[in-house]
Length: 384
Image (cartoon, rainbow, N blue to C red):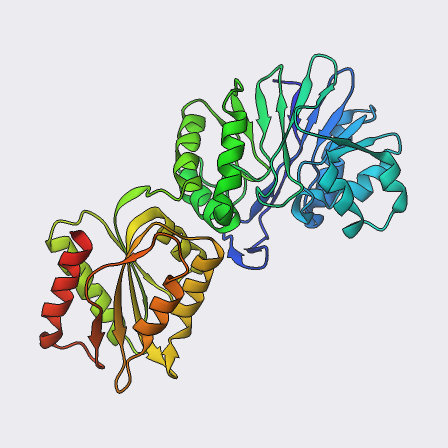
């Protein structure tokens, strides 16, 4: 294990990963060097961290020259250092999938790089001496050129973006699942079928640790739990019992109805009710909770003959991520022309195996005592 050396970088200043995902602790970009008869660098780093990455690489090499740079994923947060490393080490071969080789010119102008590329396909191996890398193609996890690398001697899987998390490397040492779930749902959530294929492809390997491109390495009990959760997430299964209420309220009237519905659900024995204010809270976390729970309530105000935009944005995100297999209840509000439920229903129709339960509750402005029986009936339908 000591011959696989970490040279990844934390960027504590990164606050918006991919220009859309909030990362209050920052972000990490993992990279490794395998020191053997031949030396292999496993991926590079993000452009904002390349000075530190190159310095750490040079320190670890201690005068040696790398023979290979294995590129598992060409996205810039992992591959920005390819050009600089290739210039610094002109004898280094770039190892990547055939699709990655075709995409390489999209990110690097140096035409000489192509002459240094060695493409690999499913099952190919690369011997470094004691260590041997076995390559497994993982297209659409979550880009088409992705591959993962299994190091046979140490039984280590370099898993690309699979099993990654948001945050710096040691931000959540005791709660991997929280940021791993938000990361998976928002980065890989659409690609459940390819992720399932990758899990099947590596199931026959004796894996003792997983080294993702983001977040901590996994081994022992943490690896077993990660594999269990990935099985649920990639199959769009329900992870936790409970109800998720997502509301989009203009002046607070719809929000108060959502909170009253929560009280009713808890009183009827529902053990967990999570509530999100779509107008104010992190959209990525809302999408995460929609995947986590099997029963979801959408409560929204009508707006300009449509639905209040935060709810539309939320449902658009669910459509993009192939959200499916859930039971949904609807609450709408409209002072003179309620129409939010109609729009929400239309957006839900394209989501596979999604069922609307109960009668839609229609509010007119502020919720009144006379609205409570309909809200109570909806609570019963949700829990039925």
